[in-house]
Structure formats: C-alpha cells, structure tokens
Image 1 (cartoon, rainbow, N blue to C red):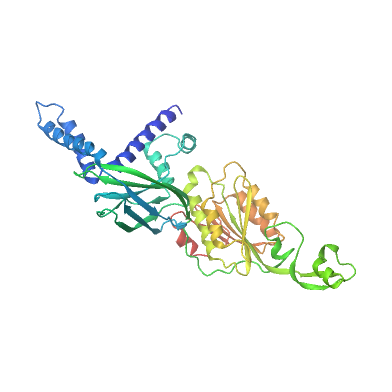
Image 2: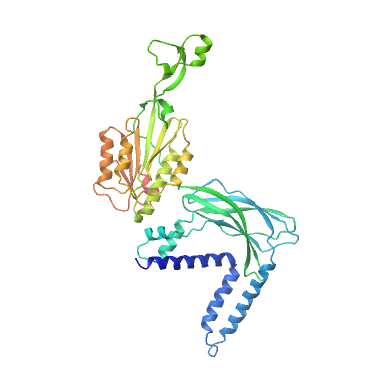
Length: 431
C-alpha cells in the first residue's frame, strides 16, 4: 500500500517526540507545555483575547528552565544489577546504588531504565499492518515493550553521600529485554525540565512466559524401553546405562573393553551395561500462527510453560518439540536440562509462518518408538491437526490435546480440551 512507507516515518517521528518529551519534562513541565499549546491556540488573535499574555508567561518559564540546564551537574556514580529472570505478568524488584561524586549537594534527581528502542522496523511494520493506523502502530510498539520500569525520584544527595534504593518494575511480555543502562535526570530550579546523563551499563534479562495453575495431572502412557538409556537422551550413539565391570566373555564387543583395568590385571575386563525403562513425554507446541492469531499463540506458549514448570522431571524425560527455522527438540530431566531451561527457551519462541503443520507431525511421529505419551498444545482445530492426533493414536501413543481457539469446535472429540484466549485458567481446569 502506498501509504505504508510515509505513515511509518510519521508514526515513528511522533513516537520519538513523545518519548523525548516524557524524559525531558517533569509532570509540572508537561502541564506548562500543555498550557503553552492551549494559550497559543486561543490567543492567536491578540485583539479578541488576552490569552497571549499567559502564553508569554508560560513560554518564558520554559525558556528560563532550559537556560539553567547547562549549569546543572549530574556527576553521580550508579551501580545496579538487573535480575536474570522475571515472569510475564508479575512484578520484580532490583536495587540501585547512587553516589554523589561531585562537590555540591544535588536535589531533584531521578532514575530511569534505558531500554532498547521498542519501535518496530520498517519490514516488521509492513508485515503486521494492513491499513495503517496509529492505534495499530501503538500496538506494535507495546508488543516490543517487555517490561515497565517507572521513573524513580531520589532524595537529595550530599557531597560524597551514597544512597541505595529499590526499584519495583513490572514484567509485561515474554522475551529477552535489552537495557543500555540508566538515565539520570536532574530537574532545573523551577522543576519543569530535566538535564539528562546516560550511565552505560548494558544488561539483559529474560522475561519467562506467564504460567497458569494446572490441576493434578496423570500423564498418559507407561514406561518404555529407551535404547541407549539416559546417555542417548540428547546425543547420538549406541550406549546403555553403565553398571560396572566384569571379566570378558566370548562374543563381547571389543569397544567395551576397559583398557585401564586390562593393563592393571593383565586380563580382559569389559564394561557392563543394563537396559533402561523410564517415562519419556513429548511437549508438542504448535507454532504455526497467523498474524491475527498472535494472542492465541502467546496463550499457547504460556500453557506449554505451565506444563514444563509443573511436570516432575526427576524420574522422567520431557521433550519440548516445536518448529522454528528448523525442527527443535530440547530434553529436560534425569541429568539433562532443567525445567527452568525449557522456560527460557519458551521465552524466545517465535511463530513459524513459512512451513506446513505436517513438519511438526512428522518430527513427533519419527520419535514414536521412545515416547511414552504426548501433550499437544495446538493453535486452533482443523482436519490437519485432527489427522495428526489420529496418527498418534494409530501408533499407540497416548496423548492429551489442548486447542487454543476463539471459535467453538463442532463435534469435538471427548479427549480434546478447547481453551479460549483470555479464559485459559478456566479452560485448563477441565483437564
């Protein structure tokens, strides 16, 4: 569309100006700025109104405040450590230490976290917006804001004094939040405009997906023989669980000879293994989301995170399977990854829009020999997804299926649980 390119630069400019004004002006300064705009519009005809006098007074206040900025010192040392992880929808806190390195007392100070620019790129804007409107633009900007850290006012600091404050923030959306550091502001004597100083302290933290409470679960399936035991959970080879050493017997493969024992005893000693039987579940996440299904996709990721967090992986394996640029499988439990690692992976998952759903189905079926059961979190319900679950049934793989959809499913199978975005907790209670 011809309007997309100019609208992108207009929206980007307006957002940039708004962001600059929010950082530069205090609440009182914003009120004065609004007064300047109103009195300037009303008092444009000086013969019909005296509002121009108020305009002159307010504009003079702002000019005086701006002229004071070069004389405001912001010589402070700032130390802060962001938390490594937070959870979407929940608040978190961290502490900041501020020291006055100047020779004069400082007041009117404030701290603001300097996050990366949330404005989308031109390509992302074109892909996500049909008819360009500012409301859609704001929605895109909001989708890139992973955390909200309000500006934190500071009390007056004497020369050489050190102050430690606690900052409370809100995690908004899963992903990796990038911070360039902190912005230290100091208001002018009139309290209208702030002098700003950047303190570069690059740091990242991961916002984990929102999690829901699951009812007590009995996972489908039973223990199965795992070729290669735990050692093959995430690697390729042909080994089993090591149990000890014994004397060589005719027919034992030479690869199993324990050479250190052979050298010490002068007779062949081999390593003995045993077969392993344990549960191995697949957590299958449907990532094939259209642009209009963004909210449903986020809910599906949250449901998958709830299972990954709740399932006890001390005595079983849990394979997280999804499709991105390629087919991915990450295994947790029994000496492999921790459940927290799966949550970090889920924090960075993006929708897949260039591959068919069958790629996921084929990847799951290819591992059918080792799987105890599957937990399938699907985006919507159609014949292709129904066929995938029928294929699991034909291979004797037990499963639980959850479909995130706004549309009611006609003639839904008894084993299918449908969940509506925005009402996920109620839907999961039916499990």
